[in-house]
Image (cartoon, rainbow, N blue to C red; front, side, top):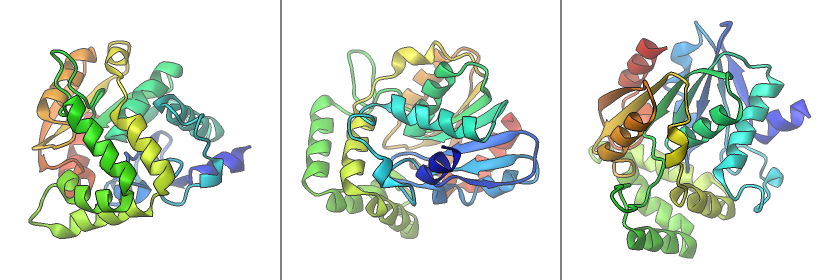
Amino acid sequence: MILKILQRNNVKITGNGERTILFAHGFGCDQKMWRFVAPAFEGEYRTVVFDQVGAGNSRIDQYEVASYASLDRYAEDVLEICSVLDIKDCIYVGHSVASMIGVLAALKAPGLFSKMVLIGPSPCYVNRGSYIGGFDASEMDYLLEVLDANYVAWARAMAPTIMGNLDRPELGAELSESFCRADPVIARQFARVTFLSDNREDLEKLVVPTLILQCSEDPIAPELVGKFVHSRIQGSSYIQLRATGHCPNMSSPDETIAAIRTFV
């Protein structure tokens, strides 16, 4: 069972610290997206990175459509990784949708996480009533229709926008290639699970000390969303990064590292 879980999520462990810091990637990415950030913590912590099922070198034969129809299953995967590695008093760092995956995992296993860092979090991507998530319902429907029709074309078109930093096209190109490496069938469903999720009510239940890192000019999780998350998580801290786009772990790793280090 231990080996099956570690292989399923392609879990990699480095560092020699007594405490563990777990890095979780978002939609369209894999653990490589942490390669500029995670090594900075290896001298103080045991660092753990992994691939969500369907991404990177995960075992896609372990994917079941019905099972992974909500973010809850992805949260269960996080808890299984922590269990087989006997992780306790863990610092969780989640990017994009992995932020809400972490929130769900924390609610399922109180006491497992001592601190959480949520980078570019969004509990709901669609505007609902007075809540502004960044996308109208019609915009989201169109986005998902295009994604379903031609995932690779969608990925290549969207990646530069999501990454931002258009003056550094190599960043958008890397994200595009990451999107295209993902299994397209799984990626299409994960996109729907991600972009149609609504975890706003879960935020108020979180009691773990939490840092929200909000990027500037984020096209996926705009500033209003980051401030909403901050307002709903009691006692949370909020930092507006100078980094632009949605992936500061790639575009501005030094600033991201500094913010995490100060918090933890």
